[in-house]
Amino acid sequence: MRTLVLNAGYEPLTVVSFKRALVLVMNDKASVIEHVEDDPVRAGRNAYDRPVVILLTRYVRVPSARRVPVSRRGVLRRDDHRCGYCGKSAATIDHVMPRSRGGRDSWENLVACCLACNNTKSDRTPQEMGWALRMIPRPPFGTGWTVRGSERGDPRWEPYLALAA
Image 1 (cartoon, one colour):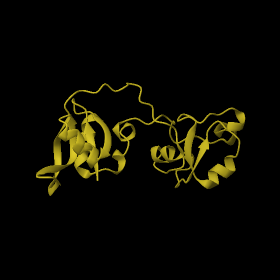
Image 2 (image 1 turned 90 degrees about the vertical axis):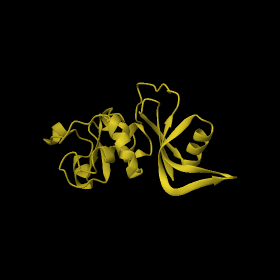
Image 3 (image 1 turned 180 degrees about the vertical axis):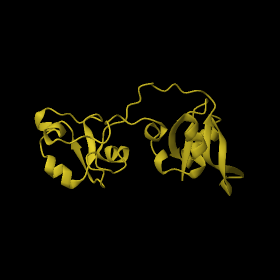
Image 4 (image 1 turned 90 degrees about the horizontal axis):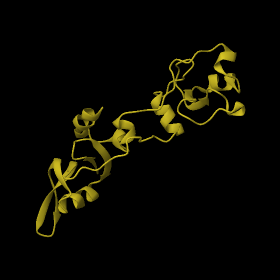
């Protein structure tokens, strides 16, 4: 079970195991905001609520330039598994400016691509093919990208993740 950690200002920070969250609560570094009903954690003679969302008691400064690392999975997720050229289901990624011509592995140069378009395009640019991109590739943003693990989280996290979006 995973627990969403909120900064003292209710900004989502990260997702941790419920055991780590419980240690933060027991050491008075966090308080439980949401917990699992009727499923306490027993430790010796004490029973603690099983945390789903915790709030840190002290504010943690977060670097403002939280960059999301480029990955194949991330590009496909950003583009909703849709080809950047034709809109069909995509399973590969494509360099808009081919690597053979100096194209880099960056959010601005990578798009999700179906196998047919990827093979047809080869090492040419979309302009040479007479193609247009369906969207402008940009780095992803929002708490779903900066808070690792929040994309497959508990439905009770939604109100807290929506506050930061």
